[in-house]
Length: 361
Ligand SMILES: Cc1ncc(COP(=O)(O)O)c(C=O)c1O
Image (tube, rainbow, N blue to C red):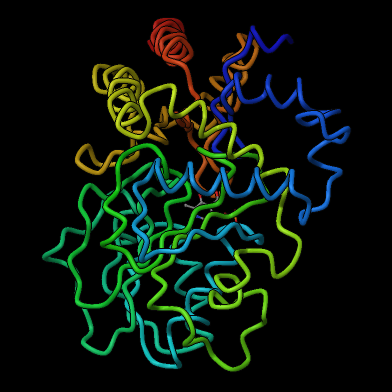
């Protein structure tokens, strides 16, 4: 299949802006007259240092990150942050965790290795189909921080409010970062794996309030210490150079599209195209409660696993790729990250209607 004939709805790694890929293609053998690919150059070279500094500056500008917060480019995915957060912030004490899906549950289990985890709220009782309201959060006075996952990639739910807590907020924004403005000053730590809205898999963006660094457990590996990474500007060891470069190209594209404010405007519209089909359908059922629906990951099912499989197969034959739900929950999922075109979503909405006409008696 040609790229032009496909729309990629993968939950991650996912579609990247065509402009960013094309530029990377043009520069792949010889970056900016260096005679080398970015993949081949020293991370200590002037060429790479410039890419690094510019990418960091672009990210700082895109999210209006205040000077109080450091931007780190780390490895190990968001999963490494499940350990890094408690190692650096828990001080052997307690922390509050909201469990609203698979990844926040893993984060809470990891943290329990290093201190006392208090489950401040969970939506497990209804298959993670909703987000607990502020009034349902039971916050512990001794918590060193409050951890939550802003967008639940597997279940297709998103927090539509910023929790109010006495302890610093720590947020996994892997599947929604750069899709809307965020008041970074409200957060102790924001982290996100790159492979959805930012870059290829391999770099994890961590935005950390510098005032929280330096309190890590004595046994914290050096590469997992926020303080080490802040002091060394993410270059204690070799950073994921190529992914950082790609992030810079994505940020250029983002700026040309009106930045995070531009993304926020279109993401609602894009998701509404699919939720409208679901809400007016006798065949499809949305998995998330309407008030908790994610604009990034639209989850739905027909109620018949074989029909779901047939949907994904027929869609794929028409170039609508990667619509199977996560293997742990089944059903169907369309991920609509920043680089997803409206044209692709319209094509999917039309396919959904056609499939219903054909298969629903
Ligand atoms: C919300 C969220 N958190 C964490 C992860 C785990 O990320 P990684 O595979 O980069 O460790 C994912 C992966 O899809 C995710 O969607």
